[in-house]
Image (cartoon, rainbow, N blue to C red; front, side, top):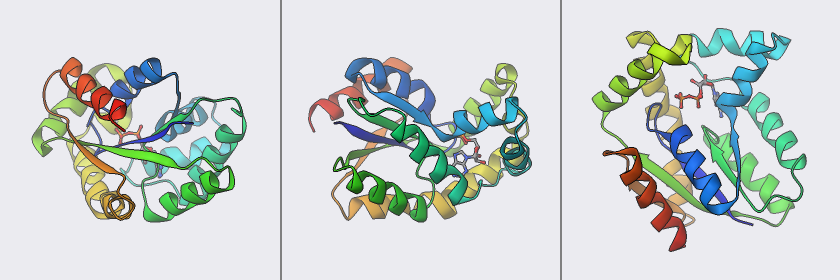
Amino acid sequence: MLNLILFGPPGAGKGTQAQFLTQSFDLIHLSTGDLLRQEIKAETPLGKEAKQLIDKGELVPDQVVIEMIKNKFAANPDAKGFIFDGFPRTVAQAKALDNLLEENKTPIKAMLCLEVERQELIDRILFRGKTSGRSDDQDVWIIEKRISVYNKKTAPIKEYYEAQNKHFPIDGMGTVDEIASRLKNTVRSL
Ligand code: ADP
């Protein structure tokens, strides 16, 4: 199995690049953001609770996203591997993911970290907000809050994977194709 984490701040291009990687390496894409948006669309109790937090730029509780990932992992027993996108977002989530993968004897191979300048992130998210319909993409205050939550709670995970020699920084500036080749080359070299 080939298990990858696609990591980086909001607007780094994780969702876009995950699509290329899933195609190239025949993997299953697991995005907690997409899963939460499906719950919101279906107006489930979980979706309603999540929407309140997402619209403030805050994180959904660890236990909620960990359960989602466990369910999706168990639902795909024949997968050749997974790309985790938007998860883990806290050290507690990273530890829970390691435990889950350890139980299944299929560890994380690499954490691919897209590095993008702050202003570029804001510009990309605002541009996406014109068509995404995502309320959290339309307001600069919420976007800045998401970036600061990332810096405070999510970025420290880099050290967690660095300690396992699994952290691979990738230049996330440039065209979609350029970034896709950088990612593909890194995965091929693993
Ligand atoms: P982005 O990377 O652009 O912020 P996502 O689609 O990954 O977008 O996530 C949207 C929102 O969903 C986040 O701002 C957060 O509120 C919530 N969310 C997604 N994944 C997680 C997670 N692993 N832990 C906690 N909250 C999450």
